[in-house]
Image: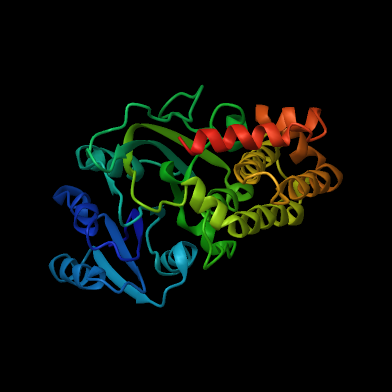
Amino acid sequence: MEKILTIAIPAYNVERYLKQCLDSFLVTSVLKDIEILIINDGSVDSTEQIGLEYHEKFSDSIRIITKKNGGHGSAINTGIEYAQGKYFKIVDGDDWVNSEKWEEFIHFLKSQDCDLVASNFCKVDHTTQKPMKQQERTFYDVQYEKPYLFQDIYGKAFIKMHSMTIRTSIFKDNNIKISEHCFYVDAEYIFFPVPYIKTVIFYEPDIYMYRLGLPGQSIDIKKMQKNMNNHTHVLERMLECYRSTDLTQLPEGTVRYMQDSIGKIVSSQVKIYISFPIGNGMRKKLMEMDRNLKKNYPEVYNSVTNKSVWLLRRTGYLFFPVASVCCQLLYNK
């Protein structure tokens, strides 16, 4: 039976969370419609054993693929390689889905033929297991369950990884590969398919339950400092993709969406630079990056709307020490 959806679960040492993740998919009425690929990325705990137990109980829907450790991007690539469903979704092994809305979501997918289905997600506090007070809505001015041409959503929505359910063939047919042994590859995953997405539809319920507050999550500023080179690598790969794409063949809205997507990563890169104490040479790195953008990617340069970046540029980066001190005070509270 053809599956409507493949869920790839990158799983590295997630023995404490994997059962919660897998149990969230066990909605009997639609279990036959999905395939779950647990990508055991070289775990040294009981992640593999847990996956095998679920495979034995639900062999028609759950498989485990064990591989050498290659990082999040490697697990995504493996999931894409083995995926057989019409649509593809990533759910990290320490996150889960909203079981109460899962049946409705699967039925919705079965009724669709858009390239991309974008659903809301819920941030959950790891300690309390309750939704966080501050939730994120990145769909500003769209009508739910209405198909759109992708170019028409520019300025109305920015689709993050946790929202994405995408046609599997977009990755397979275009040989899209995500960087391996690298952090921050979510940005590559949501960016590389953009030139090939023609249609999108929005789904209102929160489907993805995103756990926040785990020790060592890569969004922590100290972790971002440590892995700055990974972030730089991802930015360079996005620029390479932008440069190698024949933009003249794409609608204007899609091109501008790509420019703004890179602009968001540029802003994050600036955030990392100014988070370091003064005297680490980061001001020079920032100026070199910005000069390169302005010279070689002027549209991307102009797409950066972050106020801190605007102020740094307007002051010739003389404001950098002040920004750095403010950042130190903010993150060292």
